[in-house]
Image (cartoon, rainbow over all chains, first blue to last red; front, top):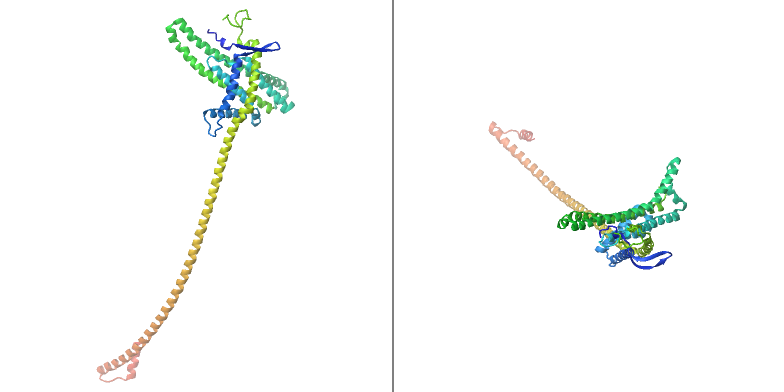
Length: 250
Length: 175
C-alpha cells in the first residue's frame, strides 16, 4: 500500500493492436496525454470564445500565457525565433499541464517517465538539427567551431562542443523526468509516514502525524513550483537550442 | 510488493516502472498522436485566434491613441488660430485707437491755435488800447503837473515862473 513506486505504473486499459512486434495499448498515461491536449486546446478556445476587448479572467489567463511564452521566445531566440512560437507554446503547455495533472492526488504523472521526456527532448534536438542544416547548410557546424580560439586547442574545444551538444537531449530529458519522479516519491514517502505512525502508535501516532503532514504540505507547495519551473526550463532551453539553429557561431 | 502485476519477472520485485521497456511503444505512440494533435490544433486554430484577439486590442488601443493625438493636434491648431485672430484684432484696435487719438489731438491742436490766435489778437487790441489810454493819461498828467508846478512855484516864490522852464522841468521829472 505504501509503495512509493506504485504510482508510476503504466496500466493497460485496452490493447489496441500490434505494430510489428510491439503491443500498442490505451494506457493511463495515454488517457492523461489526451486529457492534456483537450484541456489546453479547450481552455484557449473557451477563453477566446468571447473575443472581448476587455478580457475576463479566463481570457486574461490565456493571454498572459501567450505573452509569457512569446516574450520567452523573443528574448532567447530573437524575432526569427517567433516562427517556432507554436512549437515552444505546445511544448510548454503540454509539459506544464502534464506536470500539474501529476500534482492532483490519484492522477498519473506522464512526465515522470523517461521515455516521454526523452522523446520530447529528442524532438527538440531533431528540430534544431534539421532546421539548423536547412537554414544555414554547412555553416551550422560553426556551432562546434568557436571563433577566436587558438588552433592548437581547437581539437579539444571542438570535442567538448560536440559532447556538450550531444548531452543536451540527455540533460533536457533527465532533468524533467528526475524532478517529477523525485518530487512525487518524496510526497508519497512522507504521506506513508502518517499512515505508518497511525497504525503503529495508535492515537499518539495520529498526533505525531502532524509533523510529516506539515512536511507534506510544504513539499506539495515546493512540487507545484517545481512542476511549473521544469515546464518553463524545458521551454527556455528549447528556445536556447533553437537560437543556436537560427544563429550558429557564437 | 512481490504481488505486483508485472509477473514476467519471477525474481520477485517488478522493475522500476519508468524503465519497463514493454510500455515504451504505447507511450511513444500516444505521445506522437497527442503532441501532433496539440501542435496542429494550437498552431492552426487556437493560437491564431488568441493572437488575433490580442492584436485586435493592440490595434484598437493604437487607433484610439492616434485619434486622440489627432484631436489634440486639431484643438491645438484651433487654439493657435483663435489666439492669432485675437492678436490681430487687438493690433487692429490699437492702430485704430492711436489713429483716432492722433486725429483728435491734431484737431484739438488746431482749435487751440485758432483760439490762441483769437486771444492774442484781443490781447494785442487791449494792450494797444491800454497804451493809448496810458499815453493820454500821461499827457493829462503832464498838463496837470505843469499847472500844479507853476502854481506851487508861484505860491512859494510869489512870482510866476516861465512856462517853458516849468514844462522842461516836469518833462525831466517824468522821464
